[in-house]
Amino acid sequence: MANAIPSDADERRGVVPVVCYETSRLPTLDLPAMQAGLADATVVDRVVAPPRDAACFRVPAGHYFRIVNPNGHQVGDLNLWSADNLEERFYSGKTRQLQASHITTGDHVWSNMPHLNPLATVVHDSLAWYGIDEYGGSVHDVIGTRCDPYTNYRLRGEDYHYCCHSNLTRALASHLGVSVEDAEPHVHDVINVFMCTGFTLDTHQYFMKATPARAGDSISFFAHKALLGVLSACPGGNCGSSHSDDATPCFPLEVEVLEPASPVAIATDTRLTGRYVGGHGAG
Image (cartoon, rainbow, N blue to C red; front, side, top):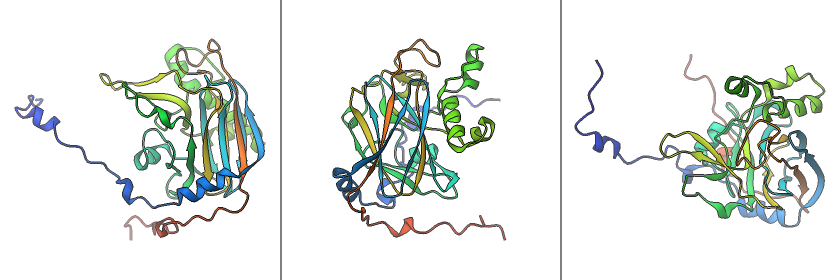
């Protein structure tokens, strides 16, 4: 027998929430030092992700990478791995718990357990002005997974091969010189760069709306270790209308890799140099 609605329902709903992970307790990294190094960094590589396709890029440790929206009106799906170990990769769940549902300047992007390292830090975001809108929407989310052919088939009963999941898979397979079957398990949940998303206030459904990005907008990261990245120029274009089809106008995205004029000296918290001993209490 189900419980009846309690007489103190309003009181139960009114309990004040507690933030699970206090950002003041996070290990600290020297953001001003990272930002200063970007000011005189030089572009040493440039990669273009064509519309409805993806491209790989590599970033040496201590360098920067900048994702540029040359035309505006385009969102991208980003995967990141440690270049030396594909088993260490971007972890969207822990990033949104430790940072926020949408990342901006000063936020770190974290890797999966058992590594749990900051892979990169956002050092500049030209869309930081957007904040959170009246619908609860914001930019650069780490909520969504990526558009994929499996969900698309479930919803529409149609095969579509240029979803971001497939784009990332093809690009990674080509870069590594392996089959798409071998590459696909490495593809993971993404940073939705330039994408404006949130959850509806009434039904709590994931929504997207047209990106506020204009031509020339960008987001820049400092790489804490050597990184392999793949960026897909999403078939949703600006994600203001249709998705996973060829109906929406799409544009390229660019990735610039930048080398600082001198090595960036970052004062790091000692908690970043250690790691859980393991064992999980067994034996």
